[in-house]
Length: 317
Image 1: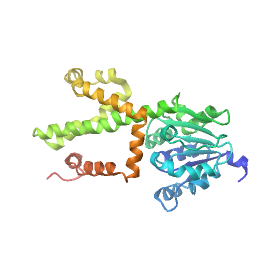
Image 2: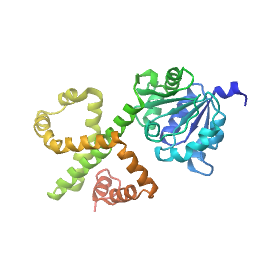
Image 3: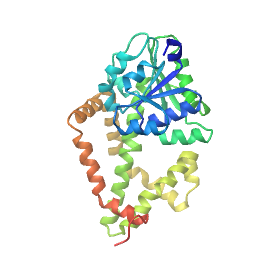
Image 4: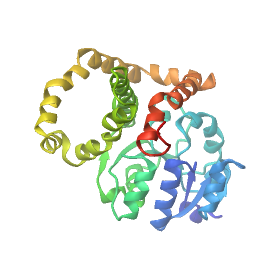
């Protein structure tokens, strides 16, 4: 493949949730897309089933003018040396999250452009809205401008993803990374999962039906989240009953009171200081014992049985 042809190729490294969505959107936008995946793994099989040319990550990197680094954050430090060594002059490397750019100290050739294009939603949603002719907003940042045109290359990539159909927000790698980690920990994953579990446990400990407790505190969350997404907090409050509204404005601050706010401040400081990144690295190096323990605990939690019964996935006892 000559150098001119190489500039026209996008290599998507990793074919998971984000990687598959990026690869499909890019191809449907007219780009020549190849996939980099480890041999013999599920990602390789899925990419081939979607009719992509598949190479090892290093081989794909050597063949492309744009590399989308979409392997899991914890796998980037191990995967990067071979990719970085294989990539050619003037390559643009795209990350969808700034974690390893901020904390990883990755060695990057000086003539490369390294940019962040972070869609504001999971890969499944990125693909769905693209197929509808719409787009997700995306955060854009430049980590290294080797060519002098890195911002333009980031915008081009975002356009190929369909994100320019919505809105592109210029930011920094630090801001995207720190805000993203905080949002995941405080609200979107950690905070939400603990909140619904604690609410379910409170009701069932008081003798209420596990299935009804699930439907009330977990199942209905999606409908209110959709309303919040569409209308914001004021609009959500206009769309609920007067009783629910008074309970909202008079009781919500008891749940997220001074102790919760102090915990959020402490969590943000752990992110900003790099403490969380070091803790995560130690967790991965140890074989992910905390992650495995908590996954097993959630799978065995009685709320999971209540969920299955409430949704008709298994018969009531």
